[in-house]
Image 1: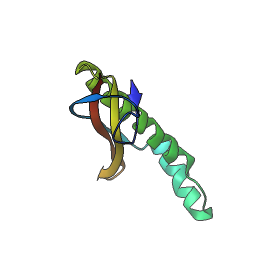
Image 2: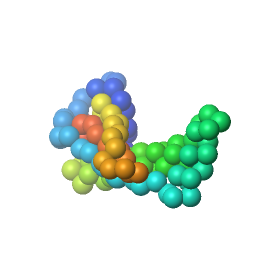
Image 3: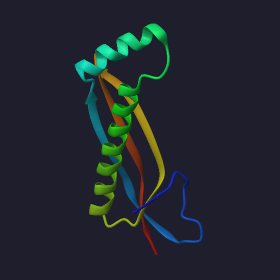
Image 4: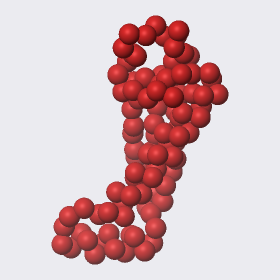
Length: 103
């Protein structure tokens, strides 16, 4: 599956199949949450949260690709990511784009 954040595949004719998306709601680990609280005292990157969001983006991307594969797509273009807090200690990550069949 070709994944691009531009709106076309250069040099290829395409047929749009529709919007595809993948979502995940990921919660914080209590141990990592404690360490993150300690990190806020001295500043710097909160590695545990960075790792959590990287994992969430990977899961959301895989779910988006699975949806596109089921539609018969060869590529997903105009890919975007979004995130939001859905409750205390949990964040939603969404990956979305347009599934395309290469001609």
